[in-house]
Length: 389
Image 1 (spheres, helix red, strand yellow):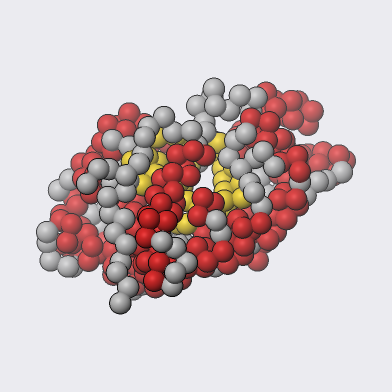
Image 2 (tube, rainbow, N blue to C red):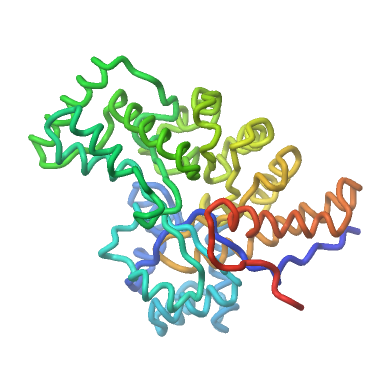
């Protein structure tokens, strides 16, 4: 019988997550829509509550608040606490020692301030610059293509001094991960179409592939020069992302570009459902890391464990990082840490049982996945190591 490796005393650095909203969700329909990527109203208000993930979350929350295991009692219990109180209680319970925040979502005006979040969570904090938002602002500001490119190079000249630890791109949502080099005339024509959109609506959503790809290469050059990590949305998301073009193998040209070898590439969401491909890529490219996301996608424990088995089967342990992808409510950051330790503990225990690892090697792998690699990659100023027993 396998003895489960207990990782409960190891603080986590949440390698990929989002801000907490300063909002309440007392209405069940509003609450349920947080747990699906579907835009369909029936999915958001009804079917989202009929999943293994949601049922597990409600039971865990009920036990945490000490109430009956019903949605109504859980929502009533959480409504008695402010967002700051929820963050404080849940982050402490889950031993979340640090967070890497994608600043692109939710909108800053709807989120807890950096000061309020830091005070409530007690967690170390670094931020990532979402590239597409930067690009869109600059396209709207500049009428000439050459001015746009020059402004972008200036904007990204010293990313750390600007307060960011790296970049995040959602190109998978816009035009796909086959990020190419385009002839200059095609990039300029794409810019002209983007400017027409600005003239018509006052802003632009960068679905103009030659332009977006070209600006991404400018950003990748900056990341390589400054040795910055770049997170890529891969796989799972709302239907706005064409899953056929959001597979990690689409990034081959970026992986193979020797000029980018000093740019660490982090493939998000475990690349689910392409998690085997993501694990393979982390095993063959020295600068590619796989993010194991344990709250979003909204998966059963069985599937989380399957993803973890696939990742640890081939990828070096130092190339894997824990995350939740939690956003808007702290319950996602919390449940991700709980379920992530559980899945990792199960799989590492199996590796010990099958003589792949010694117990101390399994413990070391768990620490690196939960915090050590992220601590190094993002330059955390805090120590996020195992707490003494």
